[in-house]
Length: 71
Image (cartoon, rainbow, N blue to C red; front, side, top):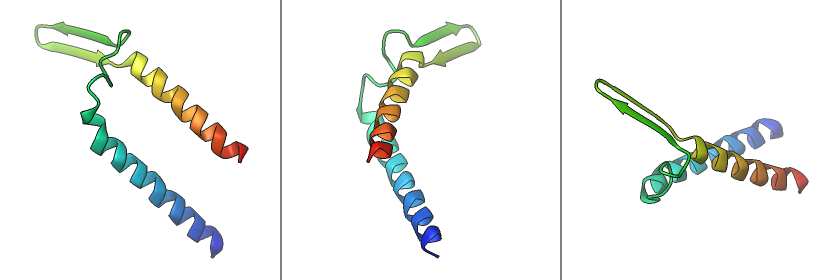
């Protein structure tokens, strides 16, 4: 039963973290509008891929997870 409890606590922390990101994310004006983000606009077509933002968030998540694993 302790494993189920740990899994539920971890799932709750992950959900709380995602909620925090969705809550604070729109208040960070530069997030998603960095140099290197791809934006193509044409008539009846719009493509936006935040490449640089994805790379920065991936590196940050990797560092955080590495630090957690190191502990």
